[in-house]
Amino acid sequence: MPTARKPRRTQQQRRETTRRELLQATVEMLVEHGWAGATTTRICARAGFSQGALFSHFPTKSALVAAAAEVLFANLNELFQTRLPLLAGAQDRAEASVRVLWEIFLEPQLHAAFELYNASRTDRELARILAPVADQHGANLRRIARELFPNVAGRPDFETTVSLVVNALQGAALGSLAGRDFETHEPMLAALTELVRKEVA
Image (cartoon, rainbow, N blue to C red):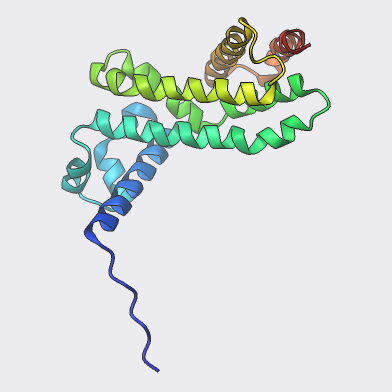
């Protein structure tokens, strides 16, 4: 019996595949080598495409990395979203949410996002492209918090509390990259948990 031929992909499908593989390679390079080490040469080698193919999809490295940041933040939001049902059933939802958020802030992918924030300080194009991506990420975190604590989500200071918790954990995660022992963060996690408990009481 002759084997059936697979249908040929359209040019649009091939372009989407190339774009997706370039973004995945960029994320991997950012995680493994940081902003300075994520060169377009390394990214193309990882993805198996030429520099010409890369720049036909992304006019600049900043545009490429900003698009990769969207993938990074989407992955992190999905990670938190998949754990949301578990948090909803936790006996101490305040502590569970702080702990899970802390675990996510320690993810290597988020460390790559930190590198992008730092690089955008001196790269105006990257800063311009990255700003709406970061804003959307913050909005997603606030939306997830409202879903987790719907009974108090309408309070005027609720989103302020969410921002305070997120910023504190983000700063602590940055400190961990400098070699600080994770155990030193226990008092901070306990204080943040108590803050959330009071907010949702």
